[in-house]
Amino acid sequence: MRPGPRNLITDVRGLLVGNASDPRLKSGVSVVLPEVPAVASVAIHGGAPGTREIALLEPEQTVSHVDALVLSGGSAFGLDAAAGVQSRLAELGRGYAVGPVRVPIVPAAILFDLLNGSAMETEPDAQWNASAPYRDLGRAACETAAHDFALGTIGAGTGATTANLKGGLGSASTILANGATIGALVAVNALGRVTVGDGPHFWAAPFEQDAEFGALGLPHPLPGDAMAVRTKADTLKSGANTTIAVIATDVTLTKSEAKRLAVMAHDGMARAIWPAHTPFDGDLVFALSTGHRQLESPAELVMLGAAAASTLARTIARGVYEAEASEADRVPTWQSRFGDD
Image (cartoon, rainbow, N blue to C red; front, side):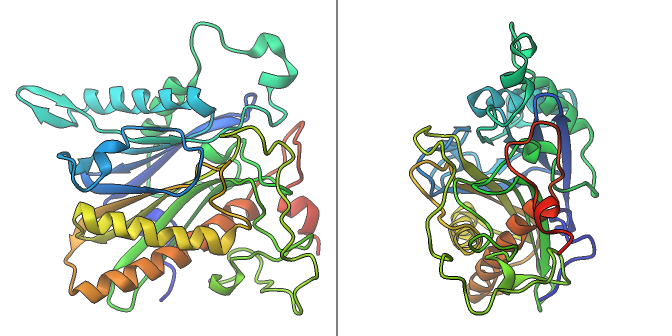
């Protein structure tokens, strides 16, 4: 297995990604935009999710394809981002056909980034009044969708944090031996840590490809505090922490198979974050199939799931590794703390 040419989720044929950010609010939106509607499902393993249009992604529900997937900051306000994406797609004639009417299907997941040193905290007059900005950010993200995009402090990762370091937007891809492609996009806002103890090493190190997050490997021996559970101080604020992700493949999957892919991808979250899937995280993985390759055998789904987990682990580490410092940050970036080392 090897990374794709971009090492981004857009190495999966038929996908674009758009990002929009508000640096003053330290928040933003990321959109995964299939060029044609794609089969999708979801697995939620965190205890405090914030979502829109999730029930329809279960295998027994009627609608099998989506027009876009949205990851957003802003807590519950961020759910408005999907409306902005939906309105833009409606203008383009996209959506589920109901007679002469088309309704774009745009599931979304949000993370809490309202208390990260942004203007929402430091400048009371900067808070919005009539409406939150996320609908406009969603539309802007949709309009910027492309194959190439930046990582770190951008889109849904703009205001993300972890227990000890700034979080961010990550992406990576894997091409399997049979030519199938897996890609991932993630906004890392975890309650826990993605690094081992107080050092620079990433828990995802065994899966790293081409020095994509520093090539440090794991520390040897593991430090004595490696297993210590250290989290954000605000652990009692349900929903204040979330890692939300999209895993995608060019292999044709049913909704049930996409659901299993999302479930298996969660193993990558557990490999990259300690602890993960807590009662105070909204940890969620969307799975997306663009349908450009046929599933060769049921056994191939096992390999796809394993690659999804390893790719998501790498993606989480990349999101933190690529984060950039900004004014009034509450935690340092990985680069500012460990980059010179």
